[in-house]
Length: 329
Image (cartoon, rainbow, N blue to C red):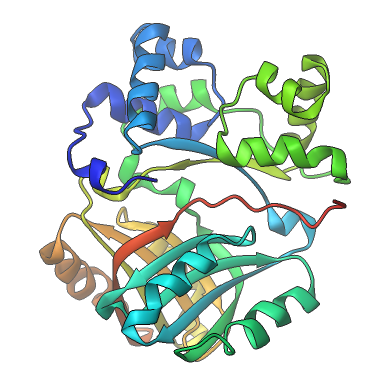
């Protein structure tokens, strides 16, 4: 994703409607999106191409690690200032990371990862990172359950309930077991780069017919194995201050606090975690003043929170990252 361009691209109402529509269904036909938001198919396609070319907006396809038995982790890496960026870039290049942020001070990295096996999680969390030069500490926390995920963030919501219903894809069944094979890899690789790749492009990448591509996409989505996410900098939507909150919450009040925070429009992630802090939240605010008010007037009113650590995000290297599966090469 480009970073400099996001400050120069201004989203109007049509752009915001398009962003919201793609959050609902990343592969919704532009014709259908145009019908729902009240513009032509050509206008929708032109706006998407403009935003994608500017590095502001893209749709990515990623696997749902939970459906594949993967474990989700949030990792914090503290290191020397001159080492933070190279280490963050190395983490962003991994197929099993979904987001990578540099946090305040430039000496800490926040990273999300989904790991398919215990051996691989040991390799990343216990051996590989601590041996990296200039790393001073690594903490890894298992995510135990989420109340809000990034694609659920209401800060980007502009469409009415009726428009949302018209765009919503069929509910995920999550019943049939789906086995992934080496034949799926070209499909998943291309979707991780462009979640809106056409059936013809996917057929060319896989060697399948377009009919086979359609069937496979449908099965993977219906099984809850494949999902499509919108990758857009919150700053493009007017939210210029991002932060990660690690909270220590009284166990008896943990679920109530998580549910309450999940209702806040600033929040794009809420997850229960292991470790000294037991609740993680990602927040998007208009500016530093908004973040201050949010912490004192909203979060501060929740009595079960015993301690909170706030770390502003100063740079994002990966967001809505593609998770490639552990399938045969």
